[in-house]
Length: 203
Length: 203
Length: 203
Image 1 (cartoon, rainbow over the protein chains, first blue to last red):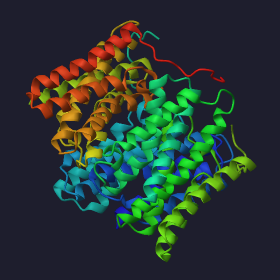
Image 2: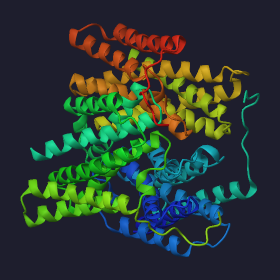
Image 3: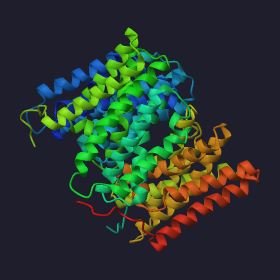
Image 4: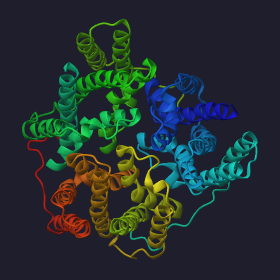
């Protein structure tokens, strides 16, 4: 139940991040909706394909269509007037990353795959939608450019898996793990943590 | 039977659209063939992966290889000498969109998924190949830039599903649905229907 | 057994090609690792998804994570100081193409698909990782730009399939097929074999 609520919030914020990025790229209202939808559903569809869930959950239940479309249209109508669009994309992306990492890891565990596999699939579910958004807009995906992106997702996935092993109650674990991912991402963005670039580059 | 004919025509025109786009991008003959093949097979492979059809139909039957390769080579040899290449890409894309939306929706219905899911998978089958073509050439996909692209596909998918529910004969329904998609797309291109862009953009 | 060794070498060299490309694109250490990992695992994951192997092999066994990460970190720390990066990417890519074409074709044959399908899936496994690397860095994939890229992979896949039909011992066939792919690719690069571009281009 809580998992469904978290996933719906994740759908809305990822759709918002895709829609904001589409508005920035000056796409029209249809492009904004399609990109919002792709960002929102991309990670979950990749997760279901990897787990062998056919057809993917998000193509069976209309709430997975209505929530992202509504979020994208809301962004299109009421998007912040000025220069904060880029920051808004990054914040929505961080929240979506946290929520989908958690729901993806939990979904994978529920199908009986080992803890190790569940972490990797949870990370893929968290990272996938945003990577598709960036690819479709011809940007190098955040996960490649931003320090502490995949690591933030990994941290959340590990907490979910450890919680399940130890037997902690699932609901608070899910909320805490998602919060950890978001906190790490926001801290990394705020503090502008930088990772090293290779030495002696030839260009 | 008719479904197979429609799918073969779809393979040829989508391969032609990919090959024309590759010629425009000045790729050599191998690049033209590979891009034609990817455009032709992309949507159907995504459809089969989402439906759990392993291995995908198009990897089992050699006609799915021969038709697109022949179409791509034909384009490479006889492509229109002058500036009409871009228009030719868009027209071939519209016909492919219509045919693959219809065959994708019908294939999905045949596996027993609900009507709602069949529409979404049909749209994915129709849109997928062209999106892969544009991504590989580093262009923002048509489905994001063009008004009335996803909606045209949706209209065709809905007609197929309604026809199946009501019990209309499949063959004429398939032809009519594909024609509807093509007509909407061509009209949208011809009339240059434009959808609104968000107000007050900061850049 | 030999198949596993070949696949591990393939993981390392494909990860190295991805990491070198990431270093060239001035990504930080996290980006280098993520891109190395994506290049190394991409082809095999696509192969398993097409064959219906859930979850993909590379997400179940930690060696598939450790080897590429170690290779990527090694490249990051000790990458050649000077202008040979681009050549190193192409060479590592050629070796990876050969090894993954062979292991992909053999894996597909082992699941019982027909020879024709096994060739196509082997090619996809060989080409997939490099294509994902190029896409993520916003470059037109090698398979579209380079003459004799898909053909080299096809040659290797055909030798594996013929070897299996005729009943030759699998180990030498695997080594020879991979060597054929690498030899064709290196020769094509060295001799700068060029395929024709379409005549009379309008731009």
